[in-house]
Amino acid sequence: MEPASSIIAKFGGNAKVAQILGAHPARVAKWKQPLSKGGTGGLIPIKRVNKLLAAAQAMDIPLTARDFLPVEGEAAA
Image (cartoon, rainbow, N blue to C red):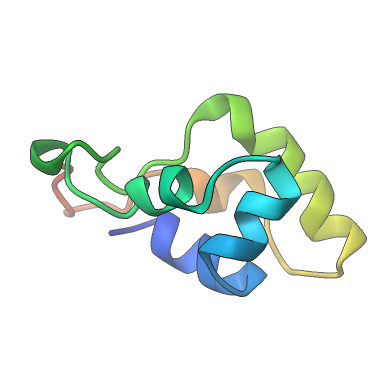
């Protein structure tokens, strides 16, 4: 689910993002699950955005705040 799937892929997967954030990989995986299954519907929690943006800059990964916005036409269901 977007935009979480694309952002996580840019970093190299759930485990890499979890390591950056000091979180459990299962927590990161929830971002890619629909709301109906206990996920976030593709949205990354706002409290994680600044840390991911800083990590992306340090790792030379092209990522902007705009990349965290929901994809138009995709339902969070």
